[in-house]
Image 1: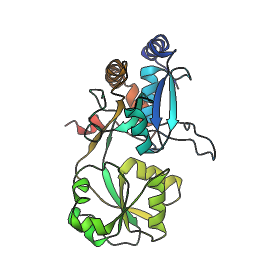
Image 2 (image 1 turned 120 degrees about the vertical axis):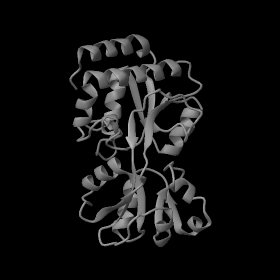
Image 3 (image 1 turned 90 degrees about the horizontal axis):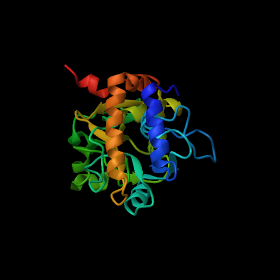
Image 4 (image 1 turned 60 degrees about the vertical axis):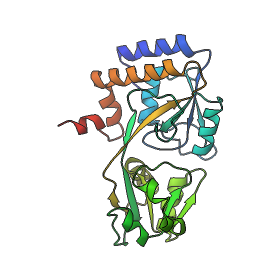
Length: 265
């Protein structure tokens, strides 16, 4: 990764502040936000590692003494974090885990879309339209509204199935391909990456999207003394990367553009 003059200062800050106690970060595989190497039996970041990982490296350093990444399912990540065994989790929302400490600026933005088999004529037009399909979701996953409220309705109890564990998103898409379920909801960026990498782009289609979005953050452990300072440092990093043009370069490596610029009139 090319490091700008500011980036060198950032790395030096990380080396002096956290070299003795590397930042312990929980990740899974949510590319292009953060990407796991596609190598059986190995748990390491991919190349490239994901745009949020690159942002973290600018904030806290990129060496083994700066950040350690721990690959684990979402539910276990939250448990380890809230019990103080980890320092941060990528990615999370304040509504999902309000007890965590957050930067004032988000590290990503998500739009939830619905995916079905290519020959399925169904289209998502709101929660009521979901009653027509077998819906499979990830257990204890925060999807945002209106899907989270729909899951609490009597209709949903009989109609929705859940899975958990590693590679849950990919496994659900494979279930759709094999006609074991009809529809799932997923972050549009993640689904696009998974469909491409699994060779499913000609078999599974986007069947509509929710109108709103979710802002994603790196959440820091509430019982770790450095968490407030780390959250502030990450916010300052986001501001600097955006104003310097470096964030645009990072996102371009993943075929993405700055979500805040997309919002500008």
